[in-house]
Amino acid sequence: MKRSASIFSLSLALGALGAAACTAKAPWEGADPPLTGDTSGDGASAGNAPAAAANGGSGNGTSSGGNTGTGASSGTGYGSAGDAGAVGYGGPPPSESSLRKVKSVLTGLAPTDAELATGKTQAGLKSLITTWMGTPEFQDKLLFFFQNTFQQSQLAQLDFEFQLRKRPGAFDLSYDIYGDNAYPKMYQNVKESFARTAIAFVTAGRPMTDLLTTNEFMMTTALKSLYMQIEAPYDIHTMSWKFNHGKRPPLSESLDPNSPNYMTFGYEAPTTSTGKKFSGTCAGDSSKVSSCPGNTLLFQMLMGSMPRDSTNNGFCGNAGCMEHAIKPYFTDQDLSDWQLVKIVDGTAIMPWDLPALRASGGTLKSKIPRVSFFSTPAFFAVWNTNDSNQHRVAANQALLGSIGMGYTSADVAIPLPPTTQPWSFTA
Image 1 (cartoon, rainbow, N blue to C red):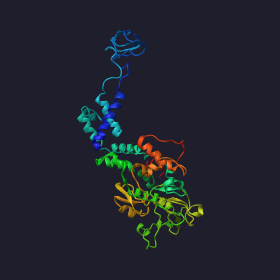
Image 2 (cartoon, one colour):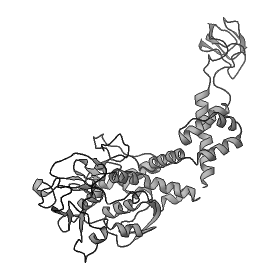
Image 3 (cartoon, rainbow, N blue to C red):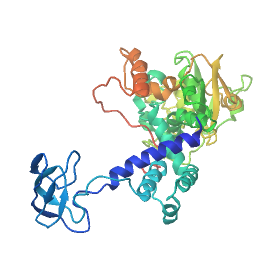
Image 4 (cartoon, rainbow, N blue to C red):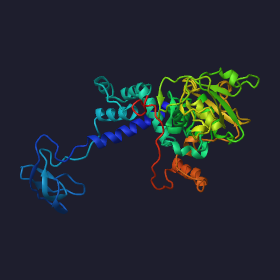
């Protein structure tokens, strides 16, 4: 299905329908104010109603305003001024109304005077739609539409517990502490991934049915890391890493088994800090080195959140440091380098091996098969669940995404995810 043809047809249909609803005249709209009085005629029914023309017969009706007309009803009500009851909902909407609706659907904006003039013909409207489809506002609208269509948008932190664990979990940040904006952008990546996939397919002229069988997804380097984290083993008792609170070794050394800095990561000051502020964080003190267990805490650190030490009832070693924000290891490029990635069977890359993930290009090896919208992390996270009903989640969401019907659960209060909107988190 070609993108321009499908969107154009959809826009015209929605525009005409909306314009008809928005521009139809009320029975009393006309050149003169409403006229009330008794009307009579040869119609088949009587009652209190607006005097209007009706199908199925003819008759002479009069109103106290002196207007006459023909119709199959009689009663007391509003008379029309002039044309024998030819009032109410009838006739096509004007081109201006259709144009306003179409542009609103596509961009959320109102048309200009020049666009109103151009859109009086079908060819003119088509040219305007092509122009509007090239705007950033249209891309935002289409992205939001596909997020909702494929059940990828309504996410909360607790929804990821069965994929990313809890206490500790990869998204289970202590007091919502993180540096800069890698954490909220990760949520944004999760929400946008399959919507961007749909847009890429339509743009390439691929049929929409391909989306139901695809193992290709639009992904960033950071999102690849998240996918690898989901299938990483629970190794909090078998794996450890270190964190230097005053110095950050080069990542190449942290990943080199022959380096003295192997699996030692470190502090860099963030530009902004979100969440609770503690004293005694050790931030900037290179004499303090904490030892931390497991890959879930390591993933938190990659996103800009360093957990507290065990001496303060935390998970990490005995350096006596409280949790604090750091500069994320994920760069802005890691969170925005979108490309179509095919997920194939193979040995997974470690989530913290960012150079390997950056170099993996359009292929990502994984032990978890991923097919279509109902296998994405966002889809699995939509419903709050627990260990006893996890097996129902995928089936329920498949129903919702495919036929718009599914099971519902009682409302629960759950934390909202982080956001990139500046008014929603503290700097």
